[in-house]
Length: 163
Image (tube, rainbow, N blue to C red; front, side):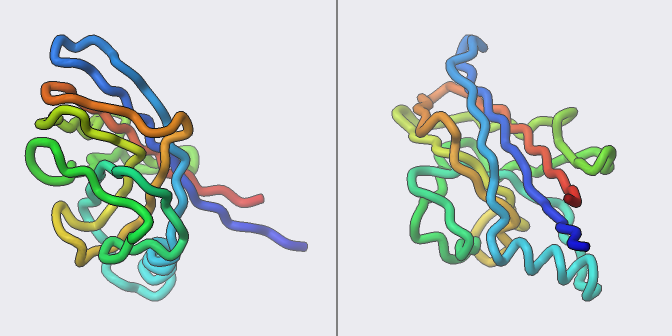
């Protein structure tokens, strides 16, 4: 008998203009790159120190692949045209085999016009490339555009299951 453990998540992103009117929304089903899978195994089984907090970032153009790390993701760029650093994921405790920041969405204040947002990611650091890339996702509806004054609200839900 074979039993499979699966882990994956969905980023839901909503863009509001400067007046609070919704411009667009999309979702992005993540991949957990090899570095993220190794981190999960190391923390749960090997006893490596857990990361807390995690940070949500905005993905620019390009396609995520399993070999991506926070330090090396040549197939896509990070979009940083917003106020401050990556946003802390403030999640509730796991319930029903899921964990989410739906009660405290990550909010990004966009600072430049004509910004392309193609998805989102979850990393172990607020800045830089020396951490763990736990998940990364491309929007299902393609690249989206934001302008200065827009705000993005990002909800991430990570789920685990057996099949």
